[in-house]
Image (cartoon, rainbow, N blue to C red):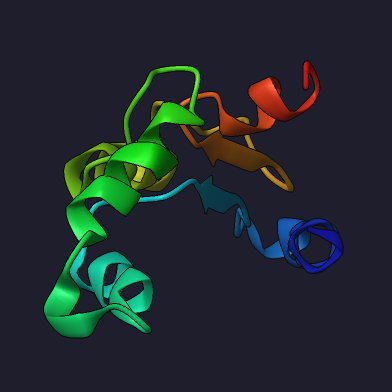
Amino acid sequence: LALTRALAIELARDKIRVNAVLPGAVETTMLYAGLSRGHLQGEGVAELVEQLGSKHVMGRVGQPGEIAEAIYFLADGRRSAFMTGQSLVVDGGAIASLSTE
């Protein structure tokens, strides 16, 4: 986050905006591969994904398209023209739930 802010300050004079997307758990092959380590032939991995999702306020893990929409928003120079040095958290409320535990 400090790098995002530092680059935003440095590059603003060149009209370059720098922002970051902070995704939560996203249902991808990488997520399944990471969770399947230590599980024989992926047994129980679907249950682990479900458990992980239950820790999010929204009750599920994210989908790749949901993260892509956040990136599209930041890339759209009209919609996010006045944003730089920011972190856009797209985690289904995972961080919010940590503060209440």
